Length: 232
Image 1 (spheres, rainbow, N blue to C red):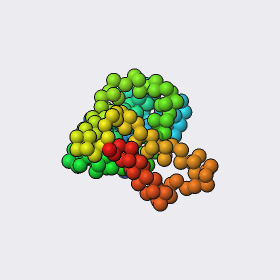
Image 2: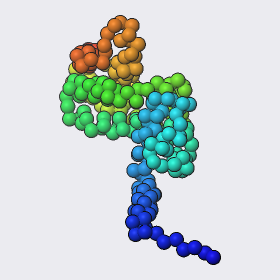
Image 3: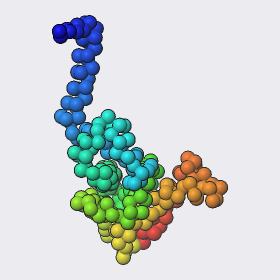
C-alpha cells in the first residue's frame, strides 16, 4: 500500500525557496556567460599567480566561483586554455587602461612621465600580473605563443610610445636613434624589478622596498632615469 507523505506548509515553502535559488543561480550562469567567465578569470588569476600552472587546481577555482569543472571546461576547453585566457585577460586590462591615458593630448615629456608613472603604479598594484609573467617566462612563453590575440593586444603599447617619441624628436626634446620596443623594454624592466625582486632585495640589503617612502622615491627615480635616457 502506497503511503502519501504530506509536507507541512513551512517545509513546502522552504523547498520552493531552495529550488528557486538553485534555479536562479543556474539561470544567471546560463544567461550571463560573460559575467560567469569574468568571475572564473578573476579567481583563476589568483590561483595561477599563487601556485603556477602545475600547482593550480580547477576544483578549487570551481568551488570559489560556485560553478563546476564542467562549466569551466565548457568555456575554456582545458586547464591550459584557462591559464592562457588569464594571461590574455591581464594584458587586455593593462592595455585598456593605457589607452585611457590620452598621451596624445600631452606634450612629449609629460606624456612619457605619465606613461612611466602609470606602468610603475600598475605593476606595484598588481603583483599577480608580475607573478604570472614570471611564471610564463619559466615556461619559456609556451602558452602565450599559442595565443592568437596576444601580439595584437600589445601593438597599441608600442604605437603609443612611437607616437610620443616621434613628437619629441620632431620638437627637439628627445634624441634620435631610439627604438620604441627598446624604450618599452627599459620601462618594463625598471618597473618590473621593483615588484619581482622586492623580497630578496629587501632581505639582502636590509631594506624595506615596500615602505611608502621607498616606493615614492623609487617611482620618481625611474621616471627620471627613463626621461634622462631619452632627452636630447
